[in-house]
Length: 88
Image 1 (cartoon, rainbow, N blue to C red):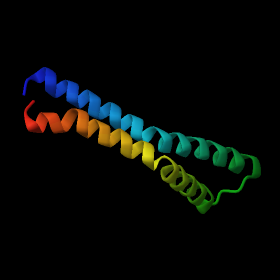
Image 2 (image 1 turned 180 degrees about the horizontal axis):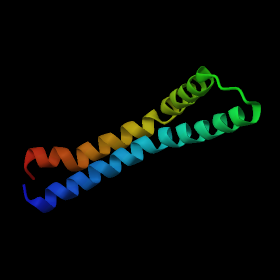
Image 3 (image 1 turned 45 degrees about the horizontal axis):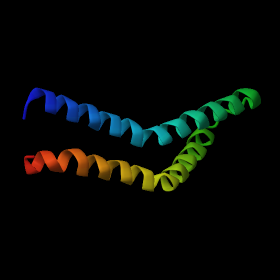
Image 4 (image 1 turned 120 degrees about the horizontal axis):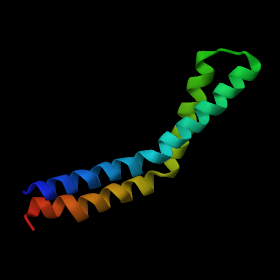
């Protein structure tokens, strides 16, 4: 395998990782900002208030976007990794 093929495959793998993780990270960021604003406005500094809603929202988004994530990973594997393994 040449360096160009290796780095191109690595670039595509990193892009697939970013694409798959973006919905979860965006929801975690939005929930963190919303909960932080709520805590600043009400002066309630409870640790479970930051953790439980954020995890719940991330689980919901993960469940909703699971087909998108699976499709992205499967297409990366079938288009890029399997042909490299097969030697084409």
